[in-house]
Image (tube, rainbow, N blue to C red; front, side, top):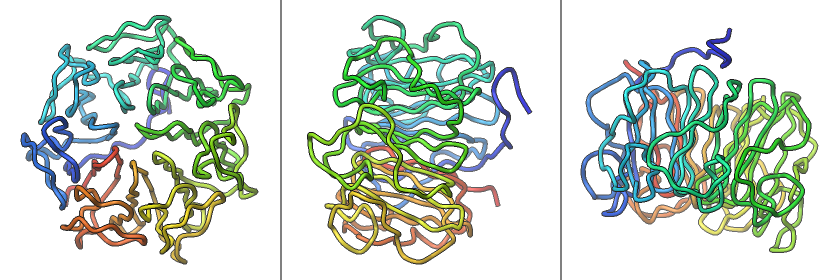
Length: 371
């Protein structure tokens, strides 16, 4: 079913929770303080939060009424509220009720509306606002006039968006080929990545320089930086970047992907969890701190549902509604009520009502079901 030109998905709503870094220049937890939290906290009393997103020191959510809210570090206008200051509690972006999906990179935000239009705001140093210039803006401005944009993603200085026709587009910074356009030239307006019309999911993290994408046939592809083997092609190093999509392994049963800064995880159709890339803080969760340049299975469980990567940590939801985390924990981003790193998955609390999780750099945004 389509609403405008965007596919309608079942409405999910619940309580908003956050955990992790929240220091004086952040406010990304939205609790109106500047204090880090090592256990999840509820943001306000409302249970009408729906789609969630996060970037570097930034959080976002769209409510069931279609309003869009941002909070966190806004000194580059990335909160879209017309200001260039931080917000330590959610603030509505304008008054529109037609927002579909939103997320952020390092200093820039990107969102789509239910009419299929694409909007960006924040820093434009590398042309990442997609409007053929390098002018920052602190309020959402439409990118072009097309009405078939659907799924946005962002990393440091680069933007990506999948269209409803299955094509994938990129713009912004391209220092190591992270735009996937077979070169290293920045772009200030959207350019199609290859010619395929079978992309179904794209994943990037606010401070990363690589991208992960999944096709409708179940294969996954990666491109960009490969310093720690994050592309999963059994090679690593500064000279091993790729400027166009390369297939990761031979599995065609991937059901979900989640990119971190220099690592990523994927869940296969059988519910198994796999990780690849940097592992110095245990962010892969395989019980070691050794980097992996090919995907390795994390444990033997077949009950993983959704996964997201942060700067040096990972968070995931199981089919039973429990949420788990592992990796670096210096500011409590694992939500385990301490600041001790973990190199294998540990359950956060005892609740089994988690719907979705998204990782920023050192914080998480979490959606909890109404019970």
